[in-house]
Amino acid sequence: MAVADMTALLKRVSSGDKQAESELLPLVYAELHRIAKLRLYAERANHTLQATELVNEAWVRLTADCRVDWKNRAHFFAIASNRMRHILIDYARRRRAQKRGEHTTIPLDESFAISDEICPFLLDLDAALDKLAQVNTRAARVVELRFFTGLTEDEIAVVEKVSTRTIKRDWDFARAFLYEQLSE
Image 1: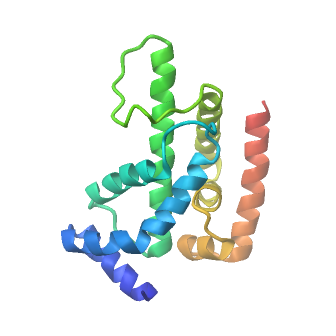
Image 2: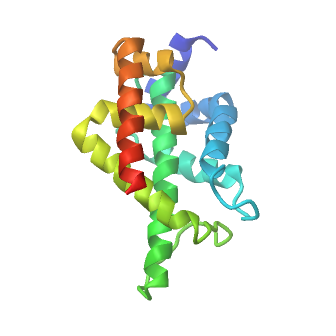
């Protein structure tokens, strides 16, 4: 499918067209699944959550929000990756709250298990990304788009409407910033 056709389809999805949603899913499923695998790569090896479950939860959240004005394919996958990140972070926060004895409801399948070792890291990474966003919003987006979504520097440059060289500088800055934050 041509990029223009995909953009038109995304616009239809934004307007609430359910037929467009059913046309879009087969076109983006493989890439969403790849992004979910990247997200789950850092998890413990023997947990039972499958990438398919993460894709399904993200898809529900993506299609429920018709207010998003999809700009293009890269924008769609950037938002999708961000939603997956927040699904995992929300779960880690709920898990931490449960360990403290606070009552929370976990809407995802109970088989979705993040190890106790990875929970603090996810929360620290999320906090560091939030700090980075306060200092340099675009650099934080570059991290999300590159690390979590797997977009190339050229694709990120298109999404952010800047040069590839600017993206490289943002990436270098973000890596140094996050290293400093996470090594404390």
